[in-house]
Image 1 (cartoon, helix red, strand yellow):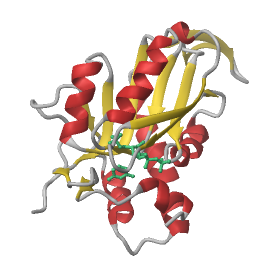
Image 2 (cartoon, protein in one colour):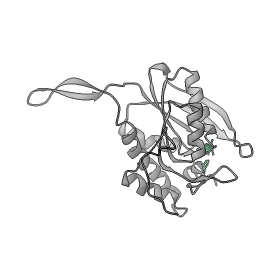
Image 3 (tube, rainbow, N blue to C red):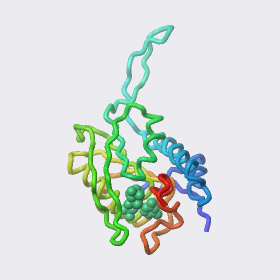
Image 4 (tube, protein in one colour):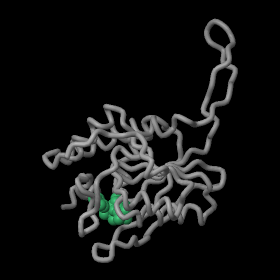
Length: 220
Ligand code: PRP
Ligand code: URA
């Protein structure tokens, strides 16, 4: 069944689906199983940049005095100097480059997690973020929000280090993952290009786009 993208659903107040036509167009390329690894990588970067534009549209501004070639004027700059990207390894790495094109000065932390194939439980293997987490606005990047185990574990580990402001950006979300995040971290807003139908018996999102990490890195 073809469904039109919707921006918000009453059922998931913690979810914003980004319905911009370019985001939806690029997502359709990613869903297509015929898309080559090279194109998949490039389009993940492109869609991530477009999503970052939307995800940051409420960032506070501060006035600054600027001298143009003609006179002094008041202009506006993003006030938060502490915006921090946190890709969840591996697949989240594919989203970093595109976001950095928009915000080249931001810091980047890393959280290493993989989902055990049998239990679907997240297994943590790496954690490194910049200092002063309590002063930062974190944007966690992971293309897939399936059961939500990895996303919840990533946010939990950030909060354990002192993080207080966290957004989660994914390409495709399953209802199960959105709800699990709402139960564990109701303060974390999720931004997705699509809310898909369900998970299959192996925890893969349907219709989804397959295994994001394998498609980015060519490991299958
Ligand atoms: C994928 C994906 C998420 C996780 C989502 O990673 O990138 O991190 O699965 O599933 P969940 O919501 O059920 O936890 P995977 O574990 O395949 O690791 P990879 O990125 O190293 O391929
Ligand atoms: N991880 C993926 O890469 N894809 C899914 O559909 C679910 C988890």
